Image 1 (cartoon, rainbow, N blue to C red):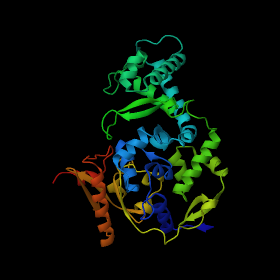
Image 2: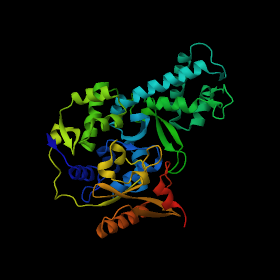
Image 3: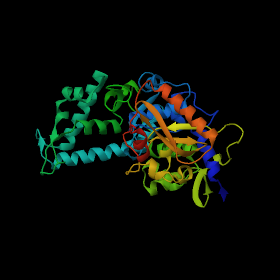
Image 4: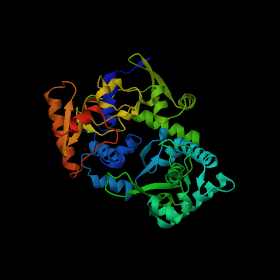
Length: 398
């Protein structure tokens, strides 16, 4: 059986994820495409992930790709997570993962509206009522072009319908359905997330017409073909890997994951005693002479550390310091294809810490990378949505 060592995997990671000198991305869109998608649960992640991989990029370049030339689009995808995807690849993600999520969200909402008291009361067929609200909301977005949720609720008052509490529990409160309807419509590819309501760090956004990207609506891709394409692209960027890694990243069942892999031309590999797979066309090792080691400061939820379920081969013994209690990774420092430390921001400055001795060359490279990133943040202060022990410690004022 073909064996691919940890060192070979790290070399692939550094080069394919634009974390090696001489292998940086030339554009934001290229960086996203080469990693399939970027995580976007935290708005800052998209920007910091791009800046780390594109030496010539500025904050404005990321915004332009998202909201001006529209080469990238935010969307619900694998594991019901928010991602940024290349616009031309979004239909694949939508078919391979988004449609199933939209179906589940819609069924859950119909069930809640059918079993819980609402204000105002919904008469008749709840599913038909919700479908009509979606049609009306989509029409309002098309007419407005781009609008906040509050503006859409004015255009379609039924979005302000609320479910009422049935217990005296503190968490059981009156809730309107605006966000739930818009989220499921986004997952269904009927509307898309537009510009933020505030700065590039804002967690509020406008909703935009999908026809600004696709005049005839989200292009349809057969589900099997979409899943095969998504798995192939993931293996190109993250392979070799285990079946469990692909299953976790996509959110598919084990049966679906194995069925998709069976339709691809793959080769079984030995990953230092762990069985894995790699595309048959991708078994050659990375060359040693075309990229030098480099340091990188990656943000919380960056797509590289979030690309695998099993991370020990690049994470080492640093999990406790760099993950929160729910398994979300914080800001990390990378050297030569592996994690060697973490970073945070204290009073507007980037502060970093190495968790192991990697030598003077690596430390100097990290210092340079931190200074470069700080200069491109335009005085912004970054606080991750999911905070980790090391990030909290580094960001605490002295």
